[in-house]
Image 1 (cartoon, rainbow, N blue to C red):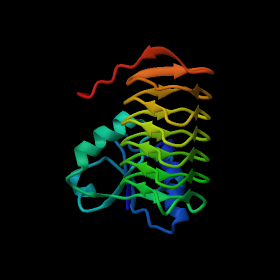
Image 2 (image 1 turned 120 degrees about the horizontal axis):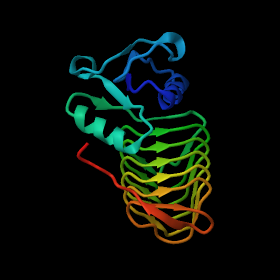
Image 3 (image 1 turned 90 degrees about the vertical axis):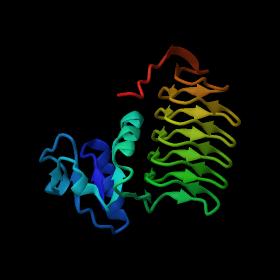
Amino acid sequence: MILYGARGHAKVVYDLILSNNHLLEYLVDDQPHDKFPHRLNIYKPTRELIEHKKVIIAIGDNHIREKIYHQIKDWCEFETIHHTSAFVSRFSEVGEGTVIMPQVCINADVKIGHHCIINTASTIEHDCVIEDFVHISPKASLAGNITVKKGAHIGLGANIIQGVTVGENALIGAGTVVLKDVPANAVVVGNPAKIIKMREINHGE
């Protein structure tokens, strides 16, 4: 297994790998450095280093993670991994490339897409749908029957009531309480959540 990325999020994913007794061969990063734990080898990404490997894209930014996915998806397989302390219902589904951090709770009939980050001690209740390239931040709580659209980011400690839809690429600020649907690309903060601006996402980058 290899990691694409060698910064802060990659360090946490490396812990997941160790918790599952997997072997990390090396890392690739656009800017190699020598500050990763255990001084593991970090190389600039090439097809030769990635091809036929099991890869986790260990990049926290949803947009960059998706961009890298499209660059390398024909060369490799993607690994899904979760920490041994996480609870993942046997009746839930988790897509390829998704990482699930310590003390997460994912309850029954949840569907989580590809290349998501379900971060430390977050809770996703029954019948939620989390689309691809979403980041659920630490201690965020999602009640039942919530839909989080592709590329959205749910901030640290945010709370979302049941039945809400969070639109594509929306950003929910830390500690925000969401009581109604959030439109695509909106940035919302506060209790209750209010839109403060709209994001500009350039998918052509």
